[in-house]
Length: 170
Image (cartoon, rainbow, N blue to C red):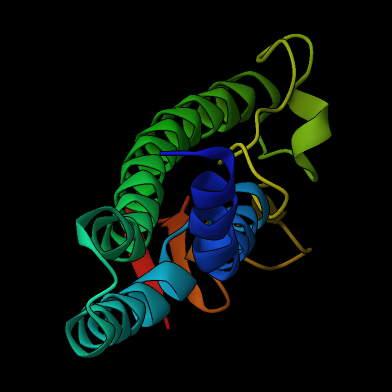
């Protein structure tokens, strides 16, 4: 494969590489989830298969056209699984710290920052991404709860301190 062939090959997959980068940025860096890739990658794979079947571009290019969206989906799916485990573990730590605070102080904290440094070294993120924080509500007269966004924009997992149960919203 000469230099001209390599350039032609990369020109042919440049759009796919750009799409993969955009999906990886959104789903891995921004949301720590899989939503956009689960919507777009199956369609992208189907279009890549059809395009390769119609155009017969050669084995390498056909494989690259199909392999890029498959690899993108696999990376995002694996990241989602890891992020979910991290969020579950961090949520258990935050809940335990809030419960210990409640035992010691006779009330739940007004905000999570009250837990540091005595109960937690620092308040952890739910997931390691831009939209990965915990949200905590303890308004006066209200019932305290902790939640985090599992799949943006809506699916939230909520811990209710009064009943010590988890539920989902949306």
